[in-house]
Length: 494
Image (cartoon, rainbow, N blue to C red):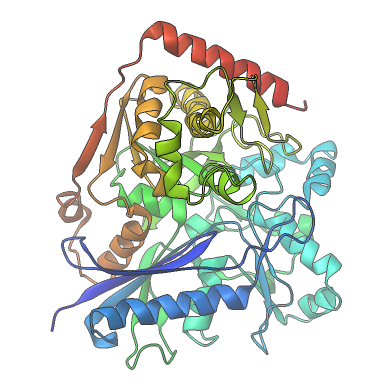
């Protein structure tokens, strides 16, 4: 009987299920978008039950499309939108509130208060993170303080917290398994990346009972078995990684200094920093990449909050395009940006600026500006933000970037990839399989169950689909950088 690995890729705007074979080839894929909830400006929520139902439906669609069942699945790997916070009642399994999404800014003022109280160095030294509403800790606290009855239930030991991986495993095992992995734990602002444990001092600082927290495991081991009716037979759940760490692994960036950028809803640039964490001096994050066996790899990370979602905004907010796939053709109708710069700070600015109050801005508009110029400036804004992070990363690590591996939906945009190579002055490499996030989760699960024998075996499967080399003149690049720097200065609020 032929065996496969099933990867669950639970993202910010959609849930996907992808079946991979032993060569890392996609055999089946199913995807379903789910509702984005915006109760107030700056607030972003998801319905946890809709996350689960969308994930369950794409699992069913993917496996039935190629006529396989649980016996054909050697293991399940899970990758997920990180930091998004779900709290539920352990007795009933019911969420006490909607999932508060990583993009949500409702706790910004509380984060400012933590900084004023002098907590920055404490949190940075333990977690590798800066204080920001992005991470899970303040979201959990908000739920405990604002949802009627939540604090009392938490104190009674009834509530459970999880990032989306934890929630999916709870549902897949019908409440038998409450776990996460080191990569997701390291994004909560509650996890000590040196001891690899929940930090009691931080739990007390945020008023979060330890009983709420999942058990932290490695990124590649058997955590439990499915109990859901989705599968007629029990299937081992054997790999977990937050989406960006999963993409780093899927890109086989297993050597220190190797770098990937994922162009999704946001943009996330990660550099493997080896077995010791590099604490950033340039406003980057230090995070756990993965743990396999006894070996831990760390990463430097730069987070861009708005990347692909700026294209969604042009589609849904302005009606400039009818579908996201149209933006490249529209942008290509003009030879350059016409002096227009788009800083897509629609949910604040992430690394390296970390300005949670910044607003999206478009500069350089004239009577000659067209929708095509704005479309082109939106794409260029994604590449410029990436450039800012690369510059910070090179300073922290003391290395010069030789190449940038890319993945994610927007990496298929050739105009964007060529501009990225030009503005960085380095090669941009797109792999044969751009589903590297799901592939990374599949690899982690497959290693745990012996589906793939080693990382070296997996490396032999990685191939290049396209290579973009810089072609722009130094004068043009210098002018573009100057225009972007001016736009950033005008956008920052501090």
